[in-house]
Length: 586
Ligand code: BGC
Image: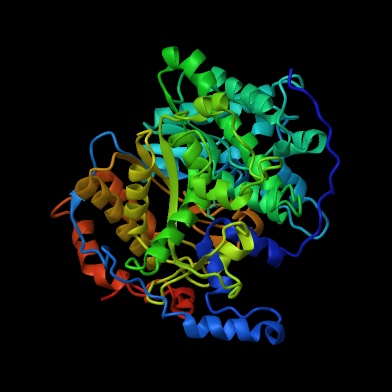
């Protein structure tokens, strides 16, 4: 049995919804970047004015220079056969039924039930009851895959085998998986999309406790035993960065453990990486032979483009950014089994006696190295990186990666970005996909296939809703074409593309106010009806034909819209989006 270590820590702290939204949005830079912006003023301008003005004067206009990727021309083409076209969701965001059928409480349920919050996840999209409807929505879109996550506390209410397996939970996922297979959709299952059983948090301090490696392994084993006869693609974790830094470093999202930026978040990541590797080894040793599936991890990928590619300092800064963001997890698993050099150097320096970044033993490195059969990349956007020792402006990196020194981020003013919402600056940078895949392929020696496990674009909630989401059609035209370009021109082994998300759902701390669905969910209707937006039809056309074949009407449509989709017009006009009469470029 795993050892039990009871930790005492500060209970959930009440923070304002705005701060939570801001920092949950910090999952990817694009969103927080829009809030803080590259010209954000330091809070106390009187003290810092000199430094700030020096920065502004010394700072060239933030544009991408000498890039090998100017606006891409459209290319027609299709993906290889067997490619998975899917949509992605996560249990907390869609299931509801938070205490139905024997489910235990998760850290997100716990957070949402604190005074002053509205627990929208209690019902969410009610997929717990409406799973057959959801599968039908996917089938209507001609999807060949569906990525969903299993709620750990629905299977194991207190997180442990000792606490008992919840048969109703097993039944629910069996029904969902069978329904998918009956509709010819591949189930692509994430085991941890952030909804830790609250009991594991309360008793053991969640991922701060090394015994979580054992608890997670028990849970993963149960998943393989119950569902592995039909599920052949498993992701252990979704975006570890996104729950570790806000949850255990900054303390702004569940479990809200504050003041962990200097040490705790690194310790948590160490546990999570080992838990991932352990689950992979369990599968490899005990299940692979009979089940023949794949186990990987889904990483949040935000491409860091050097602001000036002919300035070696910017190039180095961008590489350091990649090492801290993606490489924190990718380097151990897909590289040499260890943390990236930039992290070791900047966090630990010479402090061998008391390193803040934990140290892997040689045996652990060998165990972690190569522990994945694929990598899932959640590839939404990009950021411009430049070298600077200035403290200001206060940017995403200063806020969330204080150990990453000499590196600052900004955006290109020419990049189109999403409609005003919690995502106000969701920059539409399609070439980030190709750049990230190139970087990953060149950097890491463990060669695996890629899945684009998430990408998508938000709009704010509108009344009445605008079902003609031209901005989302543009987004998928550009991003799918970029994936095709990566396959055709660069020879990357991309095996699937998953749109985030099937339907408007609970966007974590932002609730319903930020929407990314291909289907509109009417949360005022007790039936929670889902209605396809215009983007759903386009995505169906893409999936049915495997991309953009020559002569297909949607290929022609994409060509016609191509230039317009590269401008701010489709994404950035709140009035027109809200008024619902925006029809496209013609
Ligand atoms: C997460 C999703 C989230 C999406 C949009 C991704 O990073 O995995 O859960 O809803 O971003 O914010």
